[in-house]
Amino acid sequence: MKLKSGCIPCLVERTKYECDMLFEDDREKILVLRDFIAFLFEHLEGELNAPVFFGTEREKLVKRRKCHGRSLTNW
Image (cartoon, rainbow, N blue to C red; front, side, top):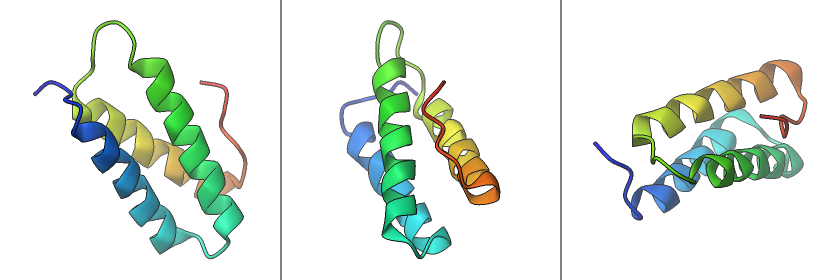
């Protein structure tokens, strides 16, 4: 399956949903969303990856943020 324009808002919405489940602090949610959106921007150039690629990386990002409480802007 190829990434389509409709996948992007869904990926961001899913990130927000997971943040709502895991974090009480809105600042933490915003940091995760910022990091995920930065990841999307970086990987939306050239050959488009499948949505599962972005979903897998989202899960890793959220897990690292929850476990380590740090920003992950360096991909």
